[in-house]
Length: 94
Image (cartoon, rainbow, N blue to C red; front, side, top):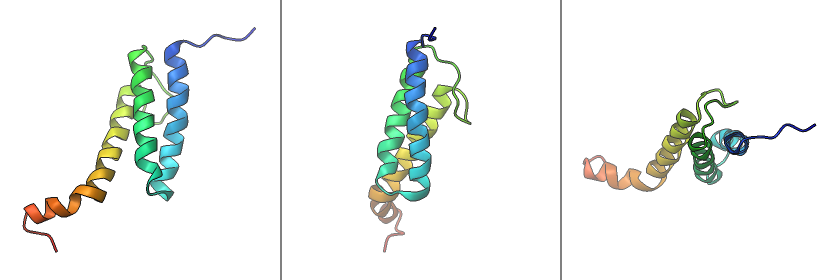
């Protein structure tokens, strides 16, 4: 007899898959990282909203994992698109 998963467990399973993709992209890819990180964060947030309290991810709770990947996506964006204007604002630009 197959065990039925809750909605939170299903979302966490999808989120864990994107967590693995985002980890590989962090090491190897350039444009795959922000997409995978946002999807990972989205599905972990959905798992959290649907009362999933633990994950297979090393960081643990879905909300913590989602927060990490939001920070990674934001950091990627700042590094690629906002770095030069920000440095110029500080008088440190080229």
